[in-house]
Amino acid sequence: MIALSSEALADFVGEIEAPDPTRLRQARLRLDRLTKPRGSLGRMEDIAAQYISIRNGDQRFALNKAAYVFAADHGIAAEGVSAYGQEVTRQMVLNFLDGGAAINVLARLHHAALAIVDVGVDADFGNLPGLLHRKIRRGSRNMLQEPAMSEEEMMRALEVGLDLASSAQQKKQTLIAIGEMGIGNTTAASAITAVLTRQPPAAVTGTGTGLTAPAHAHKIRVVEAIVERHFGVNPQPRPRSLDILRRVGGLELAAMVGLVLGAARHRIAIIADGFISTAAAALAYALEPRVKYYLFAAHHSPEPGHRFLLEYLQLDPILSLDLRLGEGTGALLAMPIIESAVRLYTDMATFGSAGVSEAQA
Image 1 (spheres, rainbow, N blue to C red):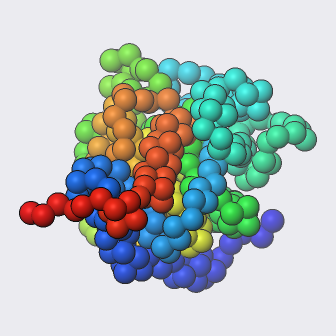
Image 2: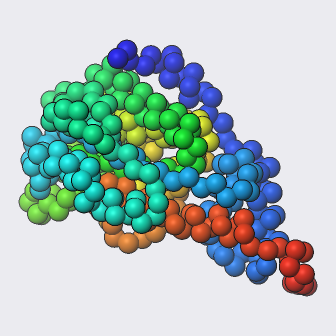
Image 3: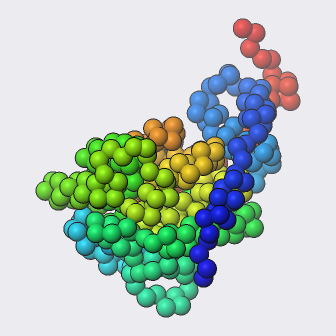
């Protein structure tokens, strides 16, 4: 597999366009004409208008849902930053394929196609059916000692996401959720968040999978050391997004960045799940700000760094349920909210069609 070139990536990203603002205005006008007091559906109206503008004003109900879960291991796990051992990444991938995880339950319930992608698990799955085999290497490097990925590895992982976005377009998928599985990836997301949002590592580093207080303090020290090693203290100007990704990201994070960029290029709405996938969305946004128009934030995670990422992206989460599982579970839970908003937009009568008098004042 030949790595994606930086020139080809730049050309692709340059093709991302913001939705036509006329479509957003037209969607707002229709929402105001529906048989309800103006604005009475609250944020559901914002969600519907955004989705319709992404779909270029198409009022037909053609919501085709899918979830992509990217799995990879992280060399930083060797530093004791997780309550779980690295073998859990492999075990959870097997659980996904067996249909026993939370993401499986929600994907079945909400009729979303589910793709499990091995982009860097430190295990040999052979030709295991049902798994998308896209492994770049068996886990990223220990970012405390060296960059997490080489330039070539990062570009190959980005290309995995871009290719899956093209596949999603061919399948006529219109709403996709991004999720992940990888022991150690909250450490990567914390480092990314600290550099992107210019917050101290202690403010953005949470307990991840449930660390004790001493282990959490150790994790903060590790993130502080990672950021200082690769970027120094308060670097000026802010490092380039791809340099942040290469140095302190991970293979599944890079694939998610690629999927976000590709989905935006193909005018597919994207739901970022929690802390990890929002970190990937934030890197995609830093590379191309027009990505923001295609993003929905599923929920607000208890991970402290998530709030700073949502502020950086200027996104309001749809749900607040204290979720910190990952896998894309929050994004799947947000799907029926978005679907409901679109159905209200497409299926409700207008004052004119229903013969109902509008408000006079």
